[in-house]
Length: 242
Ligand code: 5RP
Image 1 (cartoon, rainbow, N blue to C red):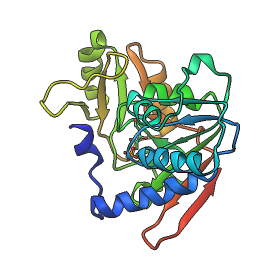
Image 2: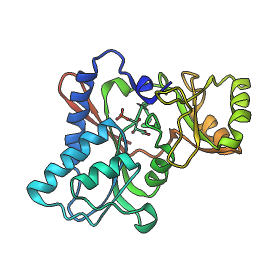
Image 3: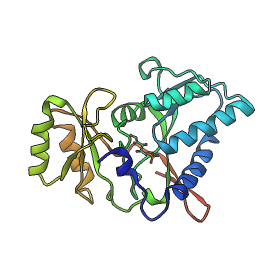
Image 4: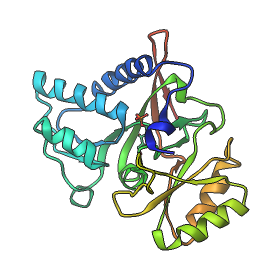
């Protein structure tokens, strides 16, 4: 499946979902402290966050010490607004990262990587004091389910890993681009999406993937998120903290 097919909203139109994403994004932009080091994630919700951040910058001047981001897409948008983007290696810890998520469960654990940026996202996430996710209500679940788990793999190991995941009942499928060719990540790797749902024991699966040779990173983000802003269709924004 392509990233767009993966992300098609369930139970609401894309326009309704975009309106909710925009509300959560605006609230997150209000959380950014002037003079801080900010992490900016990836995805359509984060795109609205960058718009709202730029509006704040223009109206009050945030004087951010540094900004680091998790994809060239977000970098391009930030630079288009005149922000300077630093490399993760060149900053210390960020004070806050605002990112989207594909699913978030009752423990604030999540699946990320629908946009293919999971490796840099996880590396930035672990180097931030506070991780805030912005989502619409369709992404909130009790147990992680309803969205395939992205696994970034080295091309040389991909076919062996695919067979291994198949044998383990994890229902693998290669991520593809619109022309049907394999999706290539920022780091030149493939993504295998694991379709099994709900995810069997996320902590066990994360441990298995962390110890599988050829796996570069996976989209299980456990114990990383501190706070989620959930935009509901009744117009409220729920602020859930760990
Ligand atoms: C990219 C991600 C995104 O944050 C996630 O896919 C959510 O994206 P969107 O806001 O477009 O629904 O993890 O790798």
